[in-house]
Amino acid sequence: NAGVTQTPKFQVLKTGQSMTLQCAQDMNHNSMYWYRQDPGMGLRLIYYSASEGTTDKGEVPNGYNVSRLNKREFSLRLESAAPSQTSVYFCASIVRINTEAFFGQGTRLTVV
Amino acid sequence: QQQVKQSPQSLIVQKGGISIINCAYENTAFDYFPWYQQFPGKGPALLIAIRPDVSEKKEGRFTISFNKSAKQFSLHIMDSQPGDSATYFCAAKGHYGQNFVFGPGTRLSVLP
Image (tube, each protein chain N blue to C red):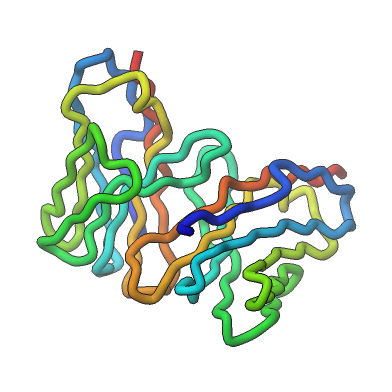
C-alpha cells in the first residue's frame, strides 16, 4: 500500500519549457489536491478535484493546468515554466470532507 | 477571512521541555482543525486534529487546546524530544469547503 506517489522527485527546467507532474493514490480516495510550498508561506492550493471528472481552481492556479485522469491519478501541467514556479509541489488526497489529508513525498522543481 | 495565522515562526526548546505553537483564524465556518508534522524532504503527515465541539484533545505527548470564542487553537508538545524537530503546520477547513487553509509553519528544534 504505497499511499500517494508523486513523480518525479526532482526536476530542473529552463524558462519556457513544459512538464507534467504525476500523482497517483491507491487508497480509493475521492478528492485530490495539488499544493505548492514556499518558504514562510505554508502550503497554497493550486487546483483540486473533488471527485473523478471534476477540477476547480485553488488560491494560485495561474500558469498551471490539471487533469483528473481517473479516480487514482491527478496530474499537474506547467505549459511554459517561469522562475516564479520554482517550488516544492505536493499532491494530497482525502477520502471525504474533513478527514485526514494524505500527502505525497513532493516534487522539488527548479526553473532556471 | 480565509487566512490562518501561526506563531512563532521558529522555536528552540531543550529536551524535556514544552513546545507551544499557536494559531488563529477568522472564518467561523471552519470546523476541522488539524496539525501536520513535516520532516525535511518529506510530505506533511497528520499529527492530531480537533473539531470545535471539544476544547482539548490529547494523544500521547501531543495536545490541542481549542478556544472557539477567541478563534484560536494551539499545539502543546510535552517532554519534547530531538525526534520532534520538524516543521509544524496548523490548518483549518470548513465542512462545505474543499480547501484546507494552512498556516505558514513553525520550525521546531529540540536540543539534546
